[in-house]
Length: 286
Image (cartoon, rainbow, N blue to C red; front, side, top):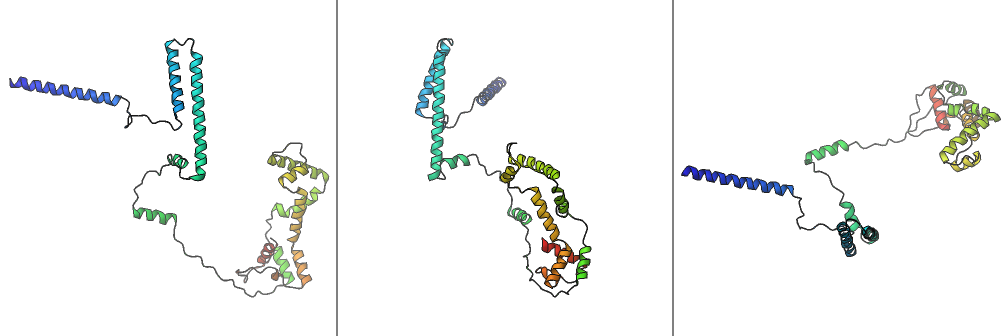
């Protein structure tokens, strides 16, 4: 008798377990609803759109009941009117948000923007780790000490020493500046000048996005670019200014020490070699 009772209890327990499992599976398979039981209304929703939506649904149901015969235009017109009302409502609300920005910076526009902004995941850094990161990114440095300018007496040198220093300068010269005499002589010939002007005009037309009928002079004005002949002449003038002979003649005319043309502040000028004279002259020209 006791064995039969135990078997019945086991069977009832198994049935209850099966019922709970089935109920749980059914609950998980159903779509979840919001806590308040109502769906959130879109921001552009109003009573007029609600009434038009009911009319659109009614027209769609009549169309389905009638087998989609005879009432197609009515349902289509109702849907178009509903769409127009939604567009008008969105436009009006957007204008209201733009006007509100002038009076309330932290109004609806601020809420719309901050809704999509996130601070990110908290890394859980300790105070020591934060201090270590800051120390690596922003290392401490010693304060910069500004040295006082010192002026020292420099021994005078002769014309021969200046010429020797100019001749001992390095031979590596830029073609832009030191090739200026060659450019100047070449541009004196009309054939070369027309060739260079054509290349310059095509380049400036591409930069200015102008029409092909624009003249070379006009496109130079638009792009604020000087002619190549003028550039070559200016470069030749600079090249002539770097000549050692001009400096020597200028020193003889003024009857002064050439080193007086260039006295940099805060720079040591003693114990320099012959080549340093040429560098000083070049720096003063620049």
